[in-house]
Image 1 (spheres, helix red, strand yellow):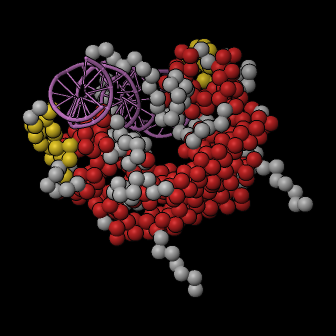
Image 2 (cartoon, rainbow over the protein chains, first blue to last red):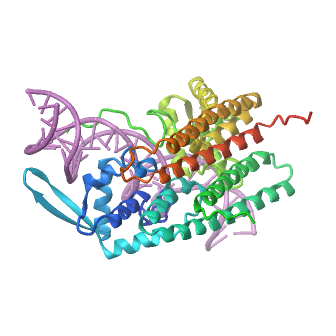
Image 3 (cartoon, rainbow over the protein chains, first blue to last red):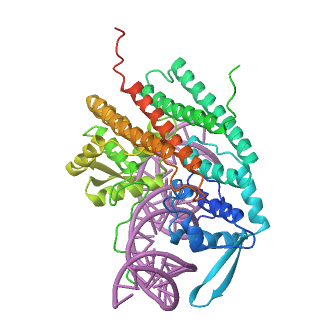
Amino acid sequence: VSGRGGAARRGGRAAGAASPAEHALLGLLAAAEPGQPAHGYDLARRFGEGHPLGEVIRLEPGMLYHHLKNLDRRGWVDAATQPQPGRPPRRTFRLTAEGRAELDRWLAEPVSHTREIRLEFLLKLYFAGLLDPSRRAVLVREQRAVLGALADSLAAQIAGRAAAPADPGDGIDPSFGVAVLRLRLAQTHAALAWLDAIGGAAAPEP
Amino acid sequence: VSGRGGAARRGGRAAGAASPAEHALLGLLAAAEPGQPAHGYDLARRFGEGHPLGEVIRLEPGMLYHHLKNLDRRGWVDAATQPQPGRPPRRTFRLTAEGRAELDRWLAEPVSHTREIRLEFLLKLYFAGLLDPSRRAVLVREQRAVLGALADSLAAQIAGRAAAPADPGDGIDPSFGVAVLRLRLAQTHAALAWLDAIGGAAAPEP
DNA sequence: GGGATCATGTAACAGGTTACATGATTCA
DNA sequence: TGAATCATGTAACCTGTTACATGATCCC
């Protein structure tokens, strides 16, 4: 009865890494007016229907306050309680220097799997555009390179299986494995084409 | 202090529904020889590297035994302990009639979101092909119809936003929302093209 | 007076990840 | 002798979902 000791990895994220939702909160705080630190209720509205973030990630109040507590524990935000007459007191949050550094690190890093495009990359794209449009173009370019390499690797694996039917007679039908790879390749190609479309800078016809 | 009362929904799954991993276990038990009921260790190997299921879903021994216990509680499998000399006793599992009915129900139902193609639909495809190739073709056809309707809906939403820039002057840039929809549409189109390719029945050139 | 909004949380539930415990036998 | 295989699980930890508690003020 000694417990685990190691670190847990959840949902493709590295050990100790913050969730996409927590990074989104850092991004919102970075975009807030310096003189007007945001509070939880205010932030919660940005994750609701009709708001751009709400189309990518939904965050119920319970989880939102939970994440803010985590960010405070990590030292990435600074909390302050402001009493207001005739209202519940507000807990306002400011981004610390460490929090800003973490946000910048996250924003500069493309995601490594196609399945992360739908949530995590969309969040990075949103905040990169909000905070610094020039960084947005860099992010799209680097994400394109990562997915391009992934597509090449998948295509090579497909070609390899077609050439060498591994262990002839082991009873395993290789066609399913190839279908799986082809699906991944198709999804990756679709993401690449989408990146090219939003990266913009439409090349003029020669 | 009264608790919640309602039902929880996890990961797009309906309340009370079994996970993809549990259905995969039902599928493996259905494909097993009737005289040779499978045991946990045996099943675990099928989720490892190099096996077709391992390319879609990984299942560590801990979770596998956990799922088998759940399936037993639901009455979908029947467990029996067989002592063997000089070895830890085996717990073998047989599919019950209720378990077989649940498997058939699951296999006949296409997934409703594009993101579920990568895991849940691939599992259905694998077991449909293993248990009854004719059912596989039906599944692909019905999945095609579901995703086709989804693509139409996404295209309509994109067209709608282009036409009516909701609430002029509300300060929200609509281009991000359109980019999100376009990504979903691109991923759905990729899945549709892949379905057409694996659904096969390649039409001969006229 | 009643519902919506402001504002912050907690309780209970559900599920997944990982390391580790246990202990025999077979094989190099 | 020591590593791998057989074989089944548990302990500790993590994230996430939903309902609910609390209590004021504003608007109809």
